[in-house]
Image (cartoon, rainbow, N blue to C red; front, side, top):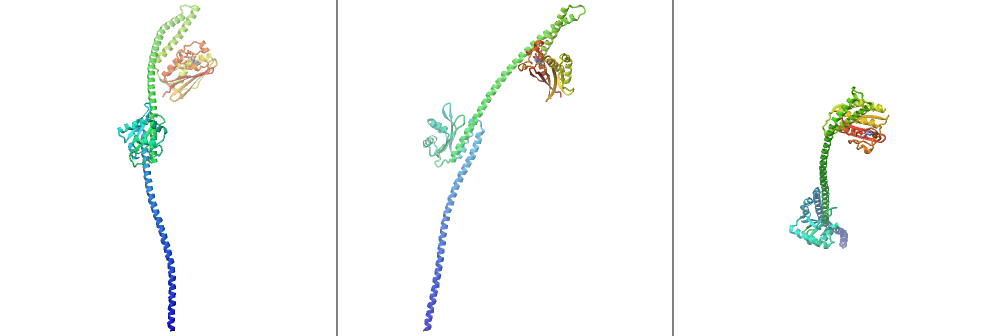
Length: 497
Ligand code: ADP
């Protein structure tokens, strides 16, 4: 019995222990289950979040695609605009500006119809300058519509702003434009060159699904601006071209007038030269006889002349010398002017010519006690000229220098090379020549009104002859002078090769 009870007791104890163990294990499992449940909950939340993110990514992708599409459209629009702008800016004719405007470009932008109207100030109306996508009869209707609402379009042009079907403001204007141009979506941009006809560019579409974006509006505004600039350039070019044409016409007319005048002057000059030449020729013969008879009478040993007759004959002799010098100078001038005397150009030393001239002039220098100097070395300067004629030039110029320089004055001759010319300067310390007279002294018969001229006789032909000789020898002559200080006569001659 005792053994049986003990057994039961033990069994009960064991069962209890087993129960406790099972309970403890269950408690543990419950905890694990709780953890599992919370993990499952967490997972579910994460899945939901992922789902949301996936939806967001898809939405963003759609948006991105749309933006990319718009960007592509804008980019191709800009490329097209650049091409059209380049083309219209190359032309300088107003008509060509609109010929260059490519309808395809506008179509690519989604505008299947477009036109440009410019204001005609003479007839006070808008005139069509460009159309695309509109048949002729449509244009006639549009033109009537514009004429009926002229003020609105003038305002549009003057307001300098775009109107588009996209903008919510200006409903009235939008409706009127819609009625006239029959477009569901459109942009109207003003064309405003600084000068000349102003107007507007209309671009629209009949596609009911089309919508005008701000980008489209901007592109049309830029295009209208480009057209304005091209019109401005064309106008400026036309103005310049017209001015140029007028100038050319004037120049042509003036040239013709001048040629005719020159021809007349040449003819008059020839007549004058011929007249002088024949008169002087006729004068020379009797003059030679007069001088000849006077000389014979003076030198004859057959008779003794009374003193007063001798004096008069000497006067006749002197005067006929002066007169024949005058006649010869006059004859030479007319011959050189008319080209009847040609220069015998030869390689010669300018110093030799000066020395030969000084042989004749040195007496005069001594008489007035004038100091003379020359800087020319013998071989340095060789010119291509007519020796005897250049000697006449030196004699005339130095003779004048002596004549117009007071006693104990100075005369100097110097020379220098100027490219392919030799320049010779003859300077004196004489009375000088006024500015006004400087422009006249090379004319025939001109003599300045100075005290020396009042005393000493002269023909006023010396410098005219000198000028003719120098020019016939391919040179130039000029004078620089100051009253009371002196004068420098300079001339050039071509250098000998
Ligand atoms: P002419 O000596 O016979 O008067 P020219 O033709 O040689 O004629 O000279 C014209 C004028 O130029 C002179 O009358 C004189 O008034 C002026 N002239 C020429 N050479 C000189 C000079 N060296 N100094 C001042 N005046 C001069």
